[in-house]
Amino acid sequence: MVGVNEKLNRLACDISFTRFVDLMTIEPNGMIDLKFNPILNRFCKEILPRIRCNVESLTLHGYFLPRVLHSTNYVGLRKLVMINLEMSMACQIFNEKTPFIQVLKQQISDIVLTIDSDILGQLNVKLFADTYNRIFVLFTNLKYLDIDTSDTYVFSGPLLTSLSSPICYSSSIVHLRIKMQNIDDCIYLLDGRLSQLKTSIIILTYVHNPVQIRLRSQRIIRHSLKIMDNMTNLIQLKCFSIHAYHRTAEFDSLVVPLLRRMTHLEQLTLSLRVAGKGSIIDGTYLNNYILSQMPRLHTFHFDIVNECVRIDQEHPKPTPDDIRHGFKQSGYDVDCYIDYGFHPSVRCHVYSLAFPLERICPITHNFPGGMFINIRVLRLKDWLHPFEHSFFAQISRSFPLLSRLIISNGNEQKEKHVDKPSIIEFSHLVELEYCNVHIDYVEQFLVDSNAYLPCLNKIYISYGHLASITENFTRIATRMNCAKLKHYF
Image (tube, rainbow, N blue to C red):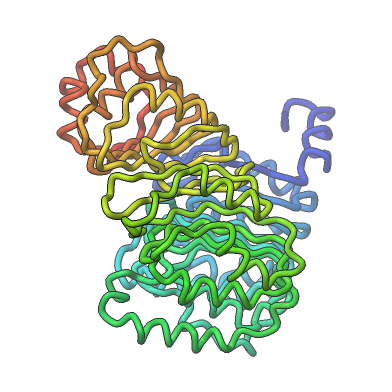
């Protein structure tokens, strides 16, 4: 509206419309020189200088960050949201010598940052660690911090072992959501340097790297417990959430001791895959070993998979009803299912209802269904049984807002020649990843008589499977679901 007439100019620059500026609708399109993006160029030259005093929150692609920040001075800016900021650019931006830091380091109170890793290996781990450290140190009035990476990125080493001494921090952070490598990273953050922290949401690649644990488990566990002894002043911590992507055998030895120190918690969320136990984690176990130490706790959400649980053959096999009943007696509304095909072991997946998380641990063909309105990321994984068309129909109903789906199943479908009762729709699915799959599941999703994927624009798939199902990209039946694809990996 700016530039049309004076009345529209005043309306467009009104503080009601310009306090929160969101530039995510402007696509980067891989441009080398941002001066050739006419929309961004006009916005930076003509609009931002006129509304700079009004802007309190700024949301943008990380690719545009230098251009936008150098356009004007943002005297009222408090919140900065940067999506898909490349690691190399993050290192340049979060530097005490940059004008951005010098001007805004005492002004910014909220940072939301998604880093897109464009550098690999140990160098990348060091750059991540340096960036994390600089953010903690430089932004002296920061209250809300959310740092994440792309969903496919896995840290190859710990990040926070080289953090500055606690005396170098003057952090006022109240809310922290952060992705790190292992539980030691989490423990270092809780050693007293973040004295005002009330909410901590921790996303880990592992509790500990399983390869290293197999080589020297006792040494690693002793080290973690030793640095855990340095944890102080957790009185302020009211809300804690921990999620680990990979399974762990260190639930009893490390996770439980960490949680038992959080005696003032009011809200707790656990999302873990636990292996190496001789029994299923039930309501009684959680109450006796964790929740009994948290007298102020009023909200407890969990998503726990017990894997490789060896069952005594002289006793009856546990049933889902047994598990549900045990949790109900402890005061929790749950659902669960059990996979018995891993003789003599079982796999039990139990989760609280209603489910508040955006992702759930991998599910198998025994998943009983339900409604999970918050789930955005889902992995389907089963090495023993195929996923049939009816199973995917149930998934589409149970997870209506799913945006990313990962499928791992090498079993051929048994009902692929049966007439399909309906076309399955995944209305919000943007990313589809195939990991060690039978080609039937490519046919299941890309052929328009099986599924309708109106938003799909990114797919992770072997070239052989893609070329075969699309008949070298000439098959008409696959054109509709592939029409919006922009990224193939």
